[in-house]
Image (cartoon, helix red, strand yellow):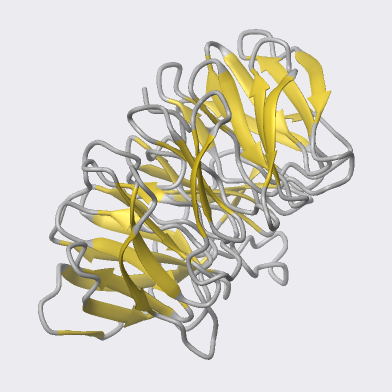
Amino acid sequence: MKKFEIFLLLSSFVAVVLILSGCMKVQSGFSSIDAVKSFDLVNPQNPMSFGQIYSSPAIFNGKIFIGGQRGLFVISSTASWCYSSNAAVYSSPSIDATNDIVFAGNNEGQLIYASYPFTNYKTMMVSYYPLISSPLIINGNIYVIDNYGNIFKISESGMEKTYLSTIGGGGSGIWASPVTNGVNLFVGSDNGIFYAVSLNSGNVVWQYQTGGPIYGTAAIGVNGNIYVGSDGLYSFTQNGALRWENPLDGSQIYASPVISQNGIIYVGTTMGEFYAVNSQNGQTIWSINLGTPEGGILSSALIGNDEIYVESGYNFYEIDPSNGDILSYVDVGYNVESNPAFYNGKIYFGCDNGRFYEISISGFMATGGWPMFMHDIYHTGRQS
C-alpha cells in the first residue's frame, strides 16, 4: 500500500491518514471511468471515531473540504490534514470564492471557518443545536440554520450574529441545506413543509405542506422555478404557486434533484428508482431501477457532459442521460449519502464506511442548469 505524505501544519491541526486502497474493478462495456481510489479518513487524535461520512465535498483551488466524524478534513494532491473537532461535521462545507474563506458547521452548533491558505481555523458558537445544513453565503452574509429550525445571519466582515426566525414548527428537524434566488432562501423540514424565507427580515414569505418529510436540498432552474423531493417531486414558482407534482414511485426522496442545461431533472428514490423528469410539465421521461438489497438512492446525481453519475445501494453508476441505460458501475462496498463533486477530471465523495473516494473519468462536468448538489463545487446554492 502507498501512504500519502502527511504534514503537521499547526498545533490546532492533526494529521489525517490517507491510505490508497488499490483500484477497484470497473464493470462495464463503454465507460468514461478510468480509475478508482479510496482512502480512509482517520483523525489520529480520535482514531476510533472514524465512520459514516454524511458531508459532501466542496472544492477550491485544488483543495477538497469535507466533514467527518471528528473534524473538517482538507485534502490536496500534496498534503492532507484535519481541523480537529470534538463533534462530528455532518454539514457540507461552503466556500466564499471571492474572499477565499471556507465555512462548515459541526454537531455542537459551532461554525468552523478559515481564510486562504486555510491554516488558521477558528470556531464561532452559533447555536446549542447541531448545524447539519450547509452555510449559505450571499451578499457578505452567512446564513446558518440549526437542526431545530433557528435561522441566523452572520456578517462575514465582523462575524456578528443576528437571530432571524425559527421554522419547522419548533423542533422539527432541518436536514436539508438552504438555496437562494438572491431574495429568499428555500429549505424544507422533516415536518414536510417547504419554506421560502426572506434573506433580509427572516420572515416566512410562503410555505407549502408536502406529503412527506423533506430531507433533500432543493434545486433552482434557470427560469427561477424550484424543485424539491418529499413523498414525490414538487415544483414551485418563486412566489410559491405549485406548478406540478409527480409522485414517482411513491417512496421517500432523500436525494437532491439536479437539472441539466436543457431542463431535464434527475432524481432517485429510496426504492432505487432513478428518474429523468421534464421540468416544464413534470412528466417522467424515463426511469430505471437501480435498487439493490443494500439500499436505494440516498445522494444526488452528478451531471457530466455525456453521462449522469449516481449512487444506489453499494454501487456507483454511470448512466446514459438519453435513455437511462447503465454504461458502467463501480462497487464501492457501502451506501453513499455524501453528494458527489467533480473537479479536474475526478469525482469525489464520502462513503458510509468512512472512506473517501476519488474516481477518475475522461469526461467533463456539465455547464449550465443545476448539475450537482448546491449547484457548484463551492456550494453557493444559487444560479449566479
